[in-house]
Image (cartoon, rainbow over all chains, first blue to last red; front, side, top):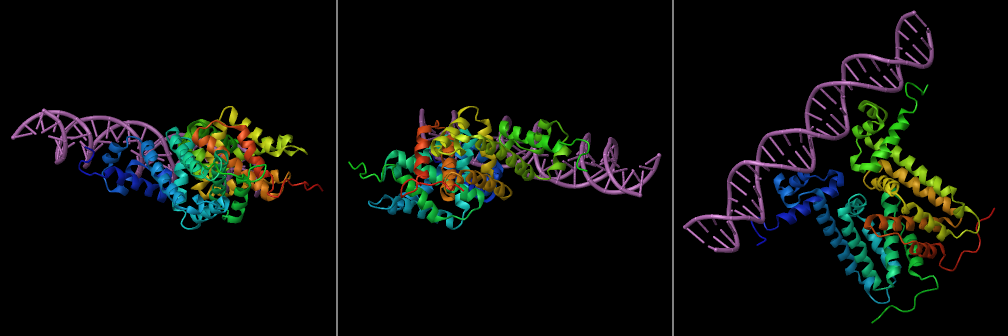
Length: 190
Length: 190
DNA sequence: ATCCCATGTGGACGAGCGTACATAACGAGG
DNA sequence: CCTCGTTATGTACGCTCGTCCACATGGGAT
């Protein structure tokens, strides 16, 4: 019952929205710009997404999917005996290394949650999912802390234009990963 | 030669811009909205600030001043023998505790640097200044790391709507403040 | 075969925007 | 006192925006 004239019209609009944000920034996102990018009439975007917030929610959720998949596929992180701090620092380096359009895009949508309550649940999903992934390698508190540090380091690189220093990131992550009384001996195995 | 009709016209416009961003968000900032808030004609805002970026730079710089002053005045942080992690966590709690309009305002301007290169030097000033302040209590690397963690923790609270957990923040900050080989014994006392 | 309604379309409306520009007000230097 | 250039003002233009609505279309239910 879902498929009518254009079964993936909705999806095409989301993809177009992501491209628009990547190219022109969140400020350049409008029903019209998305409609033009997706090559659909204006009314089509307003039909599928009554408000721009709805569209942003869908776009942010899809963008999150992408990064989560990348993290999941890195068995350097999930594999046993892996150096978590080094793995995360390397991942961040890869992410920030090449074309930053994707990074800026995801962060712009993510940061938009500051003023748009509709995006906050999605932003929370993002941090929770990543923390859950990392919690498999440490305790939940440390996992959440690592996510916060990743955010902080990434933000400083993106906002100030400072080049990414992987050794520095690894150092901080290592400090956080180590519990105050020394390295945590056991992972909650069963 | 600087003072003509209205000596602090420029300042009034900046103040109005900050109020506008606080009330309506960065998206609501326009030459007209600022002119209305400052009770000056439209042409006056375009005269003093040719572009909105110019106005944002001035507003962000002024907003930064405010927080830097707060940090400077906390001798709980700068005083000798103070618990840096606890002090920072408490400061963050105060900042996030009451009316968040000011916090959201500063962060919104700060985060806008992601897509507006004109703001990046000002954002860099902000992190550098805070890091320099903290560097007086530890080494420069740790200071920068603490700033990153503050950013990360603050961001998660603001973006996800999670209530601020001071004990949690203190715990992470303490881990970062402690050098990996154990607590740093000496403060660089001249 | 027929009807119904979710889906899709296109245009029009009013509001708000940045910008530009001609003009006025005023302090300083002659 | 008079002139000159900086500072300040008001208005108008062209544009994009979100929203709304009347209408077309065709697949699923009957």
